[in-house]
Length: 248
Image 1 (cartoon, helix red, strand yellow):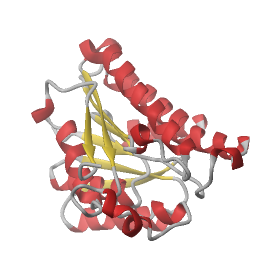
Image 2 (cartoon, rainbow, N blue to C red; image 1 turned 90 degrees about the vertical axis):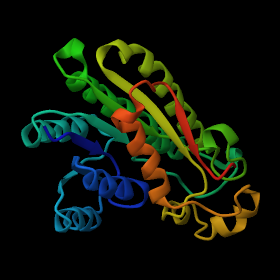
Image 3 (spheres, rainbow, N blue to C red; image 1 turned 120 degrees about the vertical axis):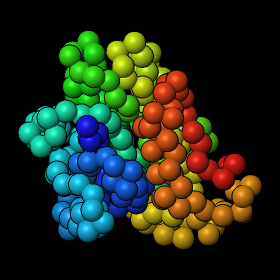
């Protein structure tokens, strides 16, 4: 039976790379996007042109009603769920903590933390043997920022990813005997559009000297780690993290 996978925030960057690789490896993929319908449609076409199976589904993961609607759509299209990649995440322009207002912090936490909790909840309700499911895997896309702190740039983003790490550890223990594995990846300096969202498109060039491997990473390099954690090759791995950061 073909396995089904939901990837949030999959219209670009790491999510898109993950969707394309997953389809190549035989998954049928639901590509979630919040606003950029055209970008998601482009990834769907690329997958279908290569003989894979994918569809796009709009939802703002920070909104519980959107998440419920998205999973209802998955129920109709897939009938089951075997994997979830909590990839959707946002950051805001670089600034120090004393410059941040509550609205900014709330936006970051709503998407990066609340959204991941909501999607994990709905995935568990479908995959857990406790609820009649047949098991599955969840991979949370965190960041090395969770460990390094992103001082002077986006400590709020780093804090949200640290919360995601706590979700990974706690949830993995809750559902370990219910057929679900929960793991995380922590990307480092990866060449995606997210740096422009923080106001510095050239951030990798500025910081790559601090990376022991001397370069930024590519989205596909993170996707390969995610797909391994989703696969049966990681059958005895849960509550764990893979740092894809060039040693940084």
